[in-house]
Amino acid sequence: MAEKRVRLKERDAIIQSLKSGVTPKLGIQHIQVGRSNEVKALYQDIERITEGGSAFRLIIGEYGSGKTFFLSVVRSIALEKKLVTANADLSPDRRIHATSGQARNLYSELMRNIATRNKPDGNALTNIVERFITLARQDAEQRGVPVTDVIQERLASLTELVGGYDFSKVIETYWLGHEQDNEALKSNAIRWLRAEYATKTDARNDLGVRTIISDGFFYDALKLMSLFVRQAGYEGLLINLDEMVNLYKLHSTQARTSNYEQILRMLNDCLQGTAEHLGFLLGGTPEFLLDPRKGLYSYEALQSRLAENSFAQKAGVIDYSSPALHLASLTPEELYILLKNLRHVFAGGDPSKYLVPDEALKSFLHHCSKTIGDAYFRTPRNTIKAFIDMLAVLEQNPSMRWDELVANTAINEDLPSDMDLEDTIYSDGETDSDDGALASFKI
Image (cartoon, rainbow, N blue to C red):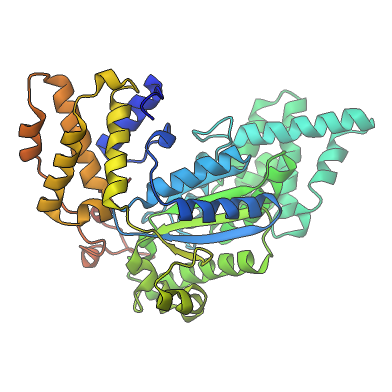
């Protein structure tokens, strides 16, 4: 690591992201430490998806424990394995099941963030469709048949699924727009695929289809997309949904149950092999899973499927094949390595530009331990932010001493994830208050 240089773009992305409390999209390989067993388990899931199977995982961890970062690591692996990925955070106006547009909003967010290896920052939907069209044209030229025939042939399997006929027709319409150099027609096709049509009338007038991607079509549309990306030359589709605690915070029992039923449907399809080339990673907190009153365990069918392996539990080991994967805490040693990595990144990969010695890292961790106890490595978010802030001060004020800064560093322990739950109402037909409980940064 000491000899590995860090590109300026990656360095800035990592530092700025961690300072503002979000997971970096670039350069995460420079700072990833620990959780090798979890990464190995998810790598096997990705392999299963590429081979035509499916995967479903709940990634469970406390606020600040590294769920979002872990999801990003798995996402980067999936991209390297030629999967298409799509990620989104749930919020009061984005849910898996709803009747007032929240599920359609979630699907739209997923499609805006859809990514490929060549376009990892998102907005790759047009590129995916263009690649499908290119492959269809090449096939048509080799066989001497119309491109439209090849498109219909390649998408024939989709028409057997719910909404598949109109999905296929929209792709065919995109080709017509491409052939006629009609940008409006191509744009309308992408709008439909992004679930940006609010009424069937508008979609029928623009594209000649009778359906739109609506609240009730959320999961079926994802299954169609997983098959489509395969036809476009990719290995499958991986969906990352974070902040699942928003479902736990729904005050309406009926709304929670409807969302949990949708999760059960997704889980059953993946476990039974009904879904193909499709994977789901859902990030949530322990109470979202375990709370018998409002969590997933309140829904009996989910509890039976997500319960921990009793044999592993009694033996004090972890079953990494379980659908619910509880993230292990970083050890103090792993956090020390993480701080060394951050120091290296901050210096742009040049050891001669390190702002603090190894002694400072040990002193900093000792100070964190005295301040907030073992929370400094169990939920290291605030520890990392404080360390980056300290390096920033030293960089801008070379005359300052690191030992003085360490002694005066304030470390705040992360609040429990169920704080302020009763102050927020998320229910259909009611006004959602500001999501202040979820406004804290994520790593």
